[in-house]
Length: 409
Image 1 (cartoon, rainbow, N blue to C red):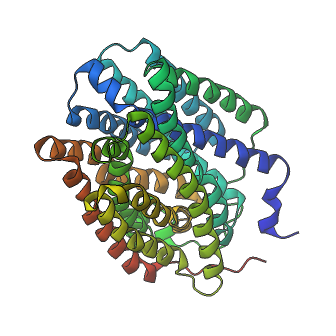
Image 2 (image 1 turned 120 degrees about the horizontal axis):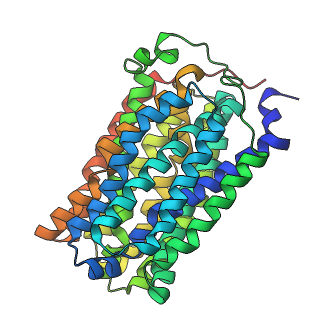
């Protein structure tokens, strides 16, 4: 039995399944608000900029928590830290039932950000210790399918449940499974030894905290993802409202359209992108970077059509843009974890998360909202296309720094 095959059965696979489930719930919670902007905005008499600031609150505290949690993850067992984080964000989600002011909702977003920071750092590090470098793209593609699927369910929960039973109801429905899965992870989940599957030889750039900041493979993947995240965060927050305003849809129809598009594109494109990159890696060790760069490049023309084209082309353009964008999910995240060695992997992931949110989606929803308040939402969303172009350029240039991977034995 090969090294890459060992993690696929027994307790290790149960751990993978539970981490995927937690990631799914993580993203459902994150996108509920985006699916029901209108009723929340109406109840609290908020502006577009204030609604965007709710996303900013989440990511500011997510970033602040990341460095500490990364440090903890490289020194202590990650399983109890993951359980603590999942319990915290589930409790904060449940607390939405008792929120009756904008300031309290803002605080709730901050607490969710702290809880989710632990999971977003530790889960990829745990999975990387189960699988060698060449196979991580595939398992991370499966893990990150939870992003579009969770976002889609978040949109749907916000738009559909919120429309019928009030905007607080989706938070109650989505909070309870978080407690259950966290308990299951504590019961049957396992934690592999750090570096158990690493095959690439460590050096100072890969295995020390100081080296992370001079590691070109890590830096180009991180800042390529950061500029991409600026665009994705802003688009994902505002696109249901964009369809309502510019395509004439109701809130329910817009959330259903975005949710259905995201879940189909997300599952298919994330798995297809991981599969293509896996095949490409057999002949080109730069494949993870090149696949990510081409994914972004192919998204650009459809983004232009979505934001500035005829309104009847909005939904087909959204479908095409999301498909190409999700192709990079597994490859780019695999490039990041492969760029460093196990002793500093959690720290590197925490630095990556800080960068992609500080330079990415922490401020983009609020910036887009501010532009919208002064012009219109099309122009605000159109600003994201510039960041997609920058991301594409960084990832193409970063391909030359990709580590050479050992072949699976």
